[in-house]
Image 1 (cartoon, protein in one colour):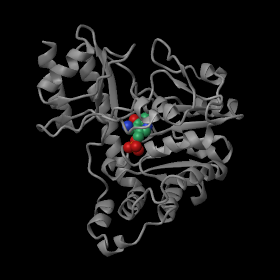
Image 2 (image 1 turned 90 degrees about the vertical axis):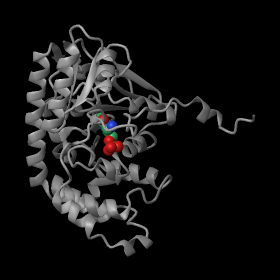
Image 3 (image 1 turned 90 degrees about the horizontal axis):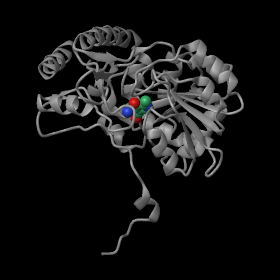
Image 4 (image 1 turned 60 degrees about the vertical axis):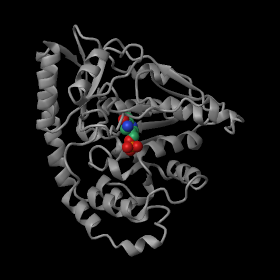
Length: 354
Ligand code: PMP
């Protein structure tokens, strides 16, 4: 039969998202969703949404949402760009800031595995800097890499390790000749955002999401904060691809969410304290747990292989993420769930370990 796909489509190696199974009910700790519901103010906006308004297209530039984000982040609305999930924004960064077949992008070897997928999709070469033995990133090595721009996830995924704000500032300064894209998807669980630096450093773009810290993964919304020239680059690319990436419901709900910082500060503090409790309990079961600053932990057992832990938990109704990749195949990534979910995980693990 004739193959109608382009050569490009045939050659793609797409990103594999964490599974969202429908066969049975799992304790789902595999995709780093927040265990707590969205803010009641966001829920209220959703419940009272004017359905008739949906006959009209949304604001193409998400202007009201950008204004709400700007107020929460202490920047100007023109410093904010909104997209259909931060994945979409990270993807747009490639054509916006990197030349096809140019000097390329540099990032860690163990980091968000969507970065190399985006690079290949947009024909941007990339260099991967190996993390150190303890899975920290030596920023000096990234600074020395020859590249048109660099991408850093802080805290990193799937390791969960965070880099302090002073170290990030030094790194952004030392890379002033090129764009620094900071993926702060998990920053709500660390609290050292580099957003205040965007005024001083025109090369810095901070990318954030509503999926984790705002409990709105199902809404699909993310945003970037940076100098107007970087925001303009993203807008130019967006308008060559999808003029209306953020729908009306999403703009309204996310604007309400971002304006309810007090609610999320309280819920995310619970996630953080649960993360510490979970890390200690895993250590007591014989796991090495990397020091996490995010809403998940990355852990390996002294005796059990990563695959055994993943499969053993799955058989007991608990889903975690396992990456069959060099250096990390013995680890599993476990989302910090509610106290009940974490208790179910620990119970299943104690059976497995025995
Ligand atoms: N960055 C990192 C490091 C992530 O783990 C994720 C979630 N998979 C994202 C970005 C994308 O998040 P979203 O598209 O839901 O905003």
